[in-house]
Image 1 (spheres, helix red, strand yellow):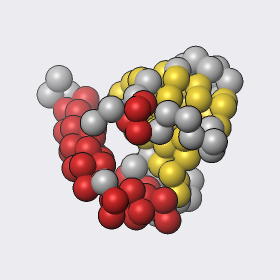
Image 2 (cartoon, one colour; image 1 turned 180 degrees about the horizontal axis):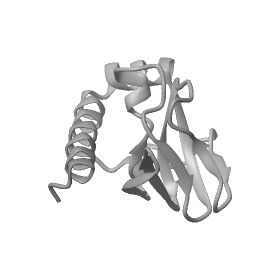
Image 3 (cartoon, one colour; image 1 turned 120 degrees about the vertical axis):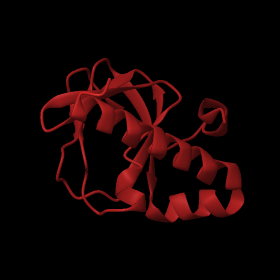
Image 4 (tube, one colour; image 1 turned 90 degrees about the vertical axis):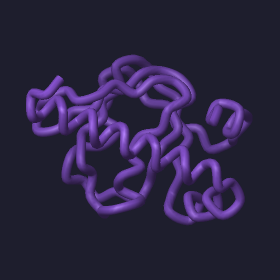
Length: 122
């Protein structure tokens, strides 16, 4: 699924400068984001677990399984993001079932990758 095409022209863009923290591990979370431009680094317990690039989502876990952030996200470059709150997330899933499958795939891949990195199985 090409999220850049899906969210092209959205009026809800959020811009954050390089080095800014989007959210921190343990923060309350009720919004996920589509990264339209830039790059974000994800850390868990201070250890880098992933990089999120243009066209990817971030913060999805806070909308699905928990109300707190499971990782910290810091802008590695200036970033442009589309925020998706709980209400918008439910609407997207209802009207675009492929979006739900995309989010589940990202979630599963990230969890597996984080587990491998944290347990040294990489």
